[in-house]
Image 1 (cartoon, rainbow, N blue to C red):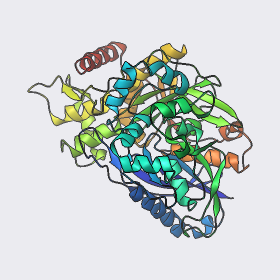
Image 2 (cartoon, rainbow, N blue to C red; image 1 turned 120 degrees about the vertical axis):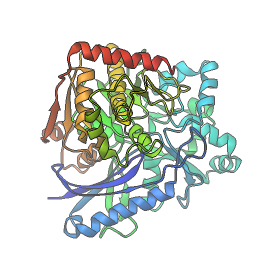
Image 3 (cartoon, one colour; image 1 turned 135 degrees about the vertical axis):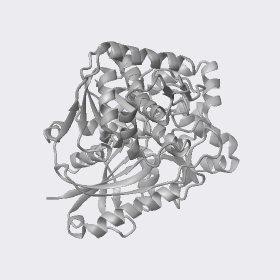
Image 4 (cartoon, rainbow, N blue to C red; image 1 turned 30 degrees about the horizontal axis):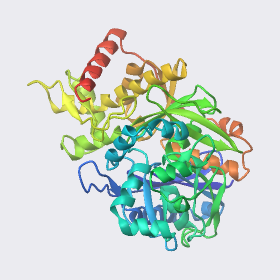
Length: 492
């Protein structure tokens, strides 16, 4: 049986997962990369470090699986979506650090655009809120603040890409400069109705259209690669997708009304709304879920900036824990939050609040408060934010969600999963595959290779699941959630 290698280039690490054609994980490898914080609110990655990590994880997988790698049918790619890098068109070398989706340096530009009345235009074309979460405002900042980069972009010496376009360029030795539609749609420069770069938006953000990559469907071929000689033969790069859309596809949410939450550094909640783009009036963004044979599928998305990243903050900044594996035990020891709520507005609050100036806070502490209460509150905040998003989506899409598919590393934490089911009041269907983003990209690759003929064929592949059903008494749910809402009001 042929196999497919998927790279999942996420906010915190780069992973390689080797799948067989039925989705069984044959092997995996991972490399973390640095999080660079030049100033408060700024977040960067070294794209060259990430490129080296991509080669490292491919080398590790290939070294352990020589027989299977000889049957490799293709290489797929899922990636952190809005993170953007400017690089040399000829060499592929980054001209500056990649600017990460969490980075708030474009906030003043976004506020200026809103004051000048550009918000409705941007929303209508892109489906997105005017927010520095997306790439365009940070590109406008880069052009204004880095004259040499601006000159190279205008002359054609430099180009702009989300991480997929950068890695495809390097993997193909500069032969292919392309992205897929899901990644393009996160830049705030792409018209999700017309499925193309928008000249008016490019002008608004001072981005030369010629510096942007070609846009292809996720299941298209993006050139061939032998990963700098690591693979025994060149294979097609096929199946490219933004990580959150990839996990929606992997969770088989192929029909309108189906939803998933990917628990990671942040959390993305996506609800399939079908083949027509609808504009949200309550704070959801309209996402391009995927394009298959020229036909788009759209979704409402609720974006949460800090989920597992909050646990990392408790570990790295407060020093309350030594590693993330401790948090579940501490939460259970606490028995309840002791009236403590942690609002993780470290980069503002996204949906449904869209309050970029909000700042993080721990409220409700007393002399009784222990570290267990704070650690538990950090985990509970993940569930509360998901409920905020689901309340918005239920009203927006006029659907009554009874279940939510879940994936990502934090789904191994049974406390977070049960508390999320309790607070949201929905059945949480947790995939046995934390690497859903990688599998979603690989599924697109299998479609592109013709191994499967349609998404319906892929949906027939069964996976083990664990189901968490709501157990908490309604009165306690209401009390806890009311406390959260009151705490949020204090930071808005």
